[in-house]
Length: 66
Image (cartoon, rainbow, N blue to C red):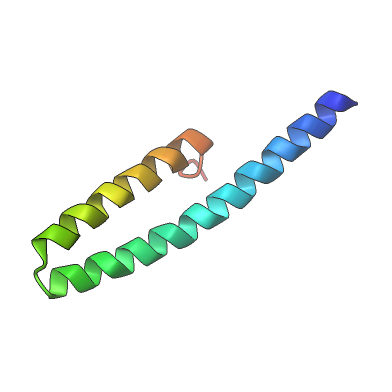
């Protein structure tokens, strides 16, 4: 029974974390768009790094498999 509860909690955590990551992804893409419009190379590079970290975490959680 404990294993079932642990699996359920882990699944719930993953789903919640993926939802947060999707919101962060949307936000960072909006920031990237604005930085590209302003031709702000520094901000573009910063956003790309943050997007890379989000992508990496989503891949680990299985967020791109759906």
